[in-house]
Picture 1 (cartoon, rainbow, N blue to C red):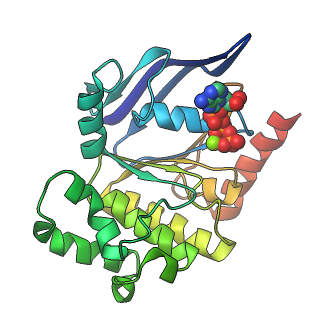
Picture 2 (cartoon, helix red, strand yellow; picture 1 turned 180 degrees about the vertical axis):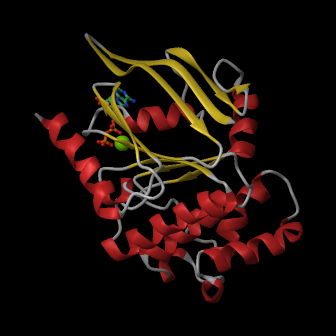
Amino acid sequence: MSVLEAKQLYKKYVLGELTVNALDGVDFQLEKGEFVAIMGPSGSGKSTLLHLIGGLDNPTEGSVLLVNQPLSGINDNAATLARRHNIGFIFQFFNLVPTLNAEENILLPIIIDGKDPNDYKARLDGLLELVGLSNRRHHRPDQLSGGEQQRVAIARALITKPSVVLADEPTGNLDSKSGKIIMELLRHSCDKLRQSIVEVTHDPRAASYADRVVFLRDGKIVEEIILEKKLPFTHRLRKINTILERLEQ
Ligand SMILES: Nc1ncnc2c1ncn2[C@@H]1O[C@H](COP(=O)(O)OP(=O)(O)OP(=O)(O)O)[C@@H](O)[C@H]1O
Ligand SMILES: [Mg+2]
């Protein structure tokens, strides 16, 4: 079953005389429980693609279906609700609310949605356990390490059981050990919770946790590889690096 289907996405930015084709005819599909990494040089359109499939921005042309519902072309209110119920975001700089503690940050999407956070106690406890922060639940972001803050952000992204989690460089601001923990958590949520994930990354190691890697250049998908479940880590990495080297030429 496909949870997300984007067809012929175009995004043009016009700045005076200059037109940037940030996305130039991208088709993208995501299956339930699938983990896809998006790679490509700076400016190739990765964040633009993530924003369009997450409904944070509208395409110039093309359509996005999220769990078979159109996301683009609907009014802002409907898009906001669809996004709130079906999408969890994880960002490079964590984007936690500094005045709220870990559990309050995790519950924020529930509160924004007008639901009673008391009904989510069991789920909150489960997620704190999952991300290994049961003993940090009352810490504010400035009392947590970067890796811990990102784990709070993962729990926040998962609290609504969204159809899709979108992560833009989730390990971009972390040391390699914390990055590994984050990637293992994302992988675990696909394998155990059947979460569907799209992750943008520059780091071949972070991409190697995915089931599929999509390579963008100049707003187009130029390569796509499948990383079979059984494939050992070193082979995954080699496969990704081979494509990256070829694309750099
Ligand atoms: N709001 C905007 N106005 C004008 N041009 C933009 C805007 N946002 C992005 N662009 C341009 O669109 C292109 C794609 O940008 P995008 O942010 O998607 O790249 P990216 O692949 O995420 O890069 P990076 O790896 O550096 O994050 C770039 O050339 C960028 O300059
Ligand atoms: Mg980007």
